[in-house]
Image 1 (cartoon, helix red, strand yellow):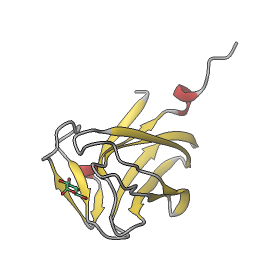
Image 2 (cartoon, protein in one colour):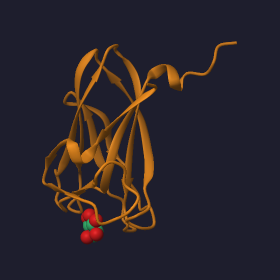
Image 3 (cartoon, rainbow, N blue to C red):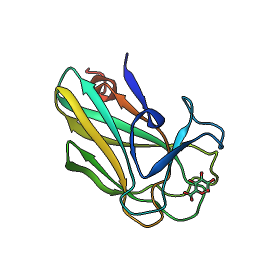
Length: 138
Ligand code: GCU
């Protein structure tokens, strides 16, 4: 497949709860981060080849206040303080994409809240094959 989805409700959760009270999520629910600094969701992602992979986090933030998170890959910063601004309502889900270097084999991708508001509600991580993001060659 061109991409693989990792559901937040199936990931490792530190200071957060799996909930399903806001419609529009994929899988069986989403993670409601505790409203504390450092709450996180951590995904274990395996890829066959090293490369720069688009990572898409699907989230909702029903407040008007940004909920930035540090995105780390294998413990190293990939997107420090990545912005997760308000989406208008809790059932309104939006994709946020970064590109990060993954190693062949198992990778640990963590999204950790950096403010006392905690993270947004997190639905899933989508890891896209690098070739999908490259333009066709002439
Ligand atoms: C509300 C909302 C939750 C959300 C929380 C928050 O309680 O229903 O889904 O996680 O606000 O502000 O984090």
